[in-house]
Length: 353
Image 1 (cartoon, rainbow, N blue to C red):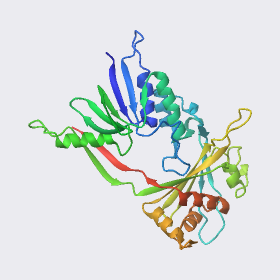
Image 2 (cartoon, rainbow, N blue to C red):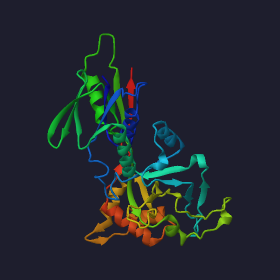
Image 3 (tube, rainbow, N blue to C red):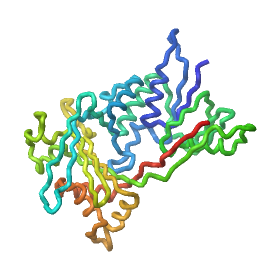
Image 4 (cartoon, rainbow, N blue to C red):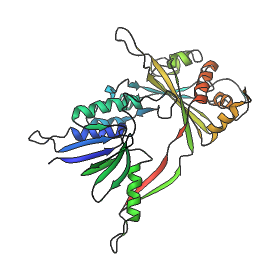
């Protein structure tokens, strides 16, 4: 009988693993495994968070990430709406005692090190399709609530109903706040160890990431947003290319707020004619120390009037995005005020003895 594999977590990692495992075949062209994926959220093709939702981030695959996907029989460039970035633009703050802007530094990337960038949702949707074509079975809106480690039975809740699923191998791919890892840690701490032996598994979780982030999407490409500020000048580059290109990745930092911003080129989800590519936009991910974004939100309005202070979105983004046009910053601020924010989760170490 084939080995029954249950994967908890249907994000990019879980679905990529499912695709690879479900593709296995023996010399007799038989499949040695059955793969089942259980995900707490709806399918990626159905569940699409708003552009300023904390789950609406992008994933930038460097050389190592791309190599890992290729080993799983996945071509990164084929991911839905993927953008290949061939340069990183660092926007340097103005020099001291002057308001004159410092030209950004452009670092072209060699072909081997170009980044493949895609929205998390697009990547998950593409991997879901690959997994199902390979023979994996996907179950969405199934939340893991318990695991019987001795009997090898996982219990899921689906729309108020309880489902018990047997397995031969259980894989936890459910993120930094993994329920699988938490349940395994609880089991090992309560299980009576054999005489002379300590528990075989334990989890050490350090403090939560102190940095928080929000995202905002501007539908215009990078060359249009920053082109009015930085006139394209090929003399500043060794390569014969414009100073700002639509496929560039951008970064800013502010020492005053200990903050940074990364902007990634993304494909817009709009209908086009004549089978042309969707226009590129920029997704801005602003990252601040924990608690500061909430302080900005509380200071944003008092009695219905905008309050201008150092602890406000307006002041912080003026310092951070110093060379971004004011009307673009205003659009970003409006999205941030109405969106939610998230942190990087727990830093977790799993120890096996």
